[in-house]
Image 1 (cartoon, rainbow, N blue to C red):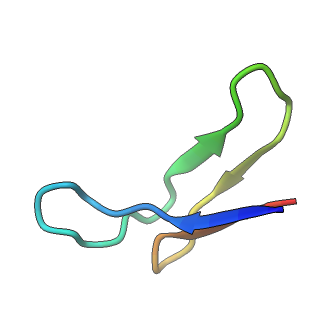
Image 2 (cartoon, one colour; image 1 turned 30 degrees about the vertical axis):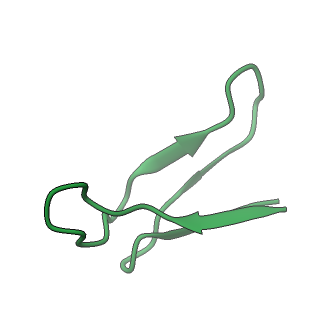
Length: 40
């Protein structure tokens, strides 16, 4: 399992609905309202 948070590099605000993909893999996830994601 891999989890984390995606934030804007300028103002450090969470990024909503960002897509997280593993290169060469078929798994992915999207961030929630707070920028959190979990890949299982």
